[in-house]
Image (cartoon, rainbow over all chains, first blue to last red; front, side):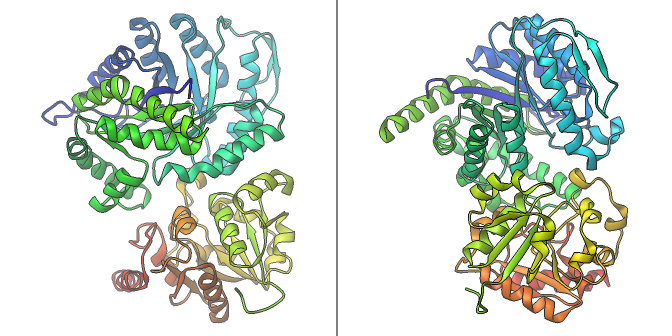
Length: 348
Length: 217
């Protein structure tokens, strides 16, 4: 695992202060910038922001937040988790991210895909039933835009391009990943376009996704593409001890799943289901050693080159998020590299 | 193993998360399995080889033809694309749910008092519609077939013989069938019910279904 990268994902979820008082939207945005800077200080490779349009997530203009972080950092990658390309205009996205790339000295990344919520569709006047068609068409356009030069393109989702060149021209490549949940079709789509794969694993044991990784690699081969990296995104919290981590995370997790239950008819988490997810599933909650071991297991099972932790949920205090990020960078990441290296030697 | 020979054919329409899991389970249980995506079978050949080796990737028409049981595991909003005439006369398992992120708001389905399957049945005249395989998450189905303490899967249909045939299938792939009343009773298995997304044993599922019937009539 010579090049295992670690990052933080956030939706600029509504923060509370240490006493549990909800911070204003603007304060959450400002502190999200601070967390990006802290991520770099902690030695992390990437800081990514999502794209939602809700009252509990303040990441609607993620590229603006990333730009503020770019101005205060010098090495950390600036990514998205995810860019909802299907309801965006790829031309505008190119303008924004090419500009971010220029400001940051080539540190802009994107992960394109389906957001965890669907609010962009009604807000911008799109039909969810057109998701696949929209995403496919816009991704195809996006790949052309990355090539630079005059673009000729025709489609249904936006006016035709008739030989325009978009500026600012890219000085450094604009790395694009595809974020997928569990759909085999999405995995194949990423392979077809020759884009690296980011698996959003938010429930169940990460090893369950070994089939998706196999599908990805075989599809790459079938499409005549070179090997590409696979990453994982999971939710969690890192604290000094397992108990401290669980005690901090459980109340906000329960509240978040209760909210989702109302919105989508799923079930709110129980203490039992929470414990199960923490011990065997997709929640990376615990001490640095515990979280490192869980991540190392996933790295081994899926052949990961990249791991992204989302250390926040609506209602979690700023202090807990900061602590997770610092521990992730200074203790968890080095320990995972150590464990993964040892696993690799053992199986060689 | 199913008792009839030659092997019973299962036709699955939809090669997404649920369809591929069901295909794998049916192959493992000894069925002849055909599975179709929304386009040319070659687009799902690799997916089928990785997730459901032994199943045959076909068109929807080929999956339906000669199938003892057809399983609908495609997005609900694509029901209109199904070949209605080809399905007529078949036992058709409706494993679909309304998923807003994929289907958008579909008031026709969400407002229906008899549940989404009662609406599906009106769109598939001549089909023997059975609501089944719809309320337990695909990942739970994937992981818990043939558990010692079997997970209970609810089955609802206006056609008793069709319900019984699906119950046999459920038992054979490794789960405990729980036959509810008529097709409308299947509303107890939908989002909003405690049965939805839960992996329960028989007693718990029966209790939840009974409670749902009590509170909604």
